[in-house]
Length: 438
Ligand code: 5AD
Ligand code: SF4
Image 1 (tube, rainbow, N blue to C red):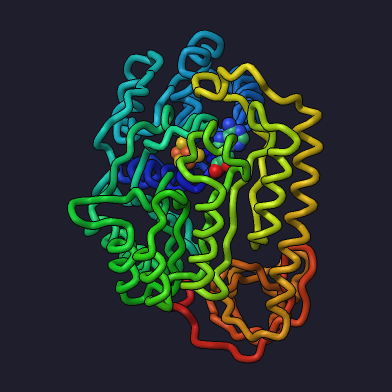
Image 2 (image 1 turned 120 degrees about the horizontal axis):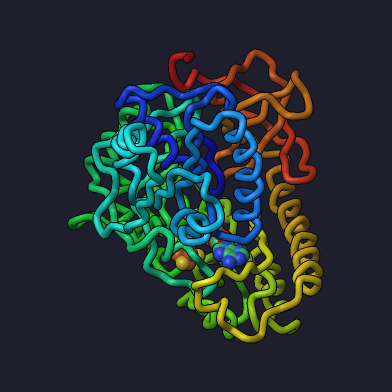
């Protein structure tokens, strides 16, 4: 199984792997040795789909040498491009949307008997894959999906069409999965959903869920992604403030700065509300890391409106940002707008935005210099085998000499420098191991 796109896909792939293992299938360590290759796909931008088309071209060649090999497309692109795949890619055996995974083991067995192609892209109002537990690689962080789908219908976004309506998992099932993850050695839990703070199950909303997960013994760090600005309330911020193990960082997608564009995007907030929300976050949660998503070149975005995005960034100075050129998604409302922006203009705007964000990331990171911060050692630094890389509570990467620390340790690190997107530090104290070594 190969996974593309967002963390929700990573979590879904782990879920499918868990189901398959339970049904007697085993993961192959090479594509040439595999009887079946599944691509868990993303449709958020055209580029994501292009990658899959080119990957499918390679798999088709592999299949010509090994005609028995099964090729499956799952996830958002399967949902979005079902007809195109069926018509133009006859070598694809399975096309499965995000609500059809429960059937994979059964469908594979059936395919063995009939060899017929299988298509199931029905979306469900209820499927939350309750009581199915994922097969995870060992590591620091366990992704746990808490809700699926999205009802916001931002006009640029394909997700409400590929993932269907919002639905939430019961609190008990999420808590049980988090407890199991801790028992298996994971120390960080990231709660996932297209709109985590639209979470609602019976009387529990997102703040209650966060509170319940924070009380699980052994959960050292909790993160979540992504909330929608419209649904962030003070209760959520108070729960973050009141639990040391809920990380002091919020990902808050801005998308655009100008009110007319926000309205055309159907984002349901105005610039002033977004600004006051970030102020509230910083008041209630001092030092909170705030990251964002921004799209440039949305249809009809004028130069002045793009400048407003820059002006909002200047006011907030996000700690980090994921930035995208608008990509038209057939089927969405914005794709029908008649005033699309040229690629050249989008390129220029993206470059400006990246430059500005770079300055802001440095500005925020430099404020950490001289502080001693708690870091979870996660992996070896890419640049040097004598250094570790780990994250702070507010989601910044820190590079520091290994000393006697090991992966999974919590260490106190004094920050001595900030360069690029990283902090650099020195260990002051190695804390207790966050769990038994795996
Ligand atoms: N074009 C460009 N970026 C997009 N995103 C979602 N849809 C599109 C699109 N059509 C971005 C948004 C969202 C992030 C996950 O992807 O910024 O928050
Ligand atoms: Fe897409 Fe908007 Fe839903 Fe996020 S909130 S998944 S951007 S429609």
